[in-house]
Length: 93
Image (cartoon, rainbow, N blue to C red; front, side, top):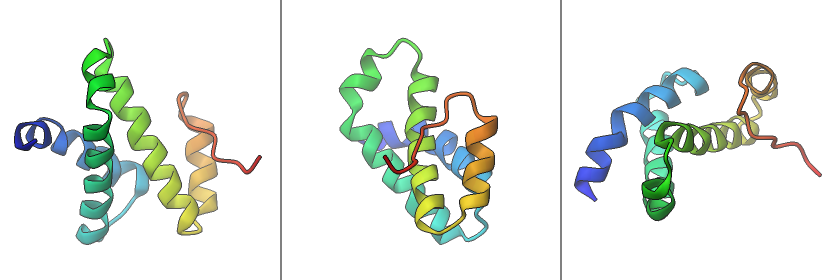
């Protein structure tokens, strides 16, 4: 697992920082850890994916969007959903 984390940590950390606009290191680390854990649980699907970057980015977006929604940052969430072509839809059914 250490190798897995080393392979993807900086990519995920950077995406979380940019997308969520977080400045607190603790929050960035927490969200990054959650995403890496999710990716680890989906390792078989990730390994089978021909476009690993897209797969990872979708997982990152799902977590970042959930974080923004839970923290009441609806304006930022709406903005990102409008500008990102693969943004997950988190609207209530």
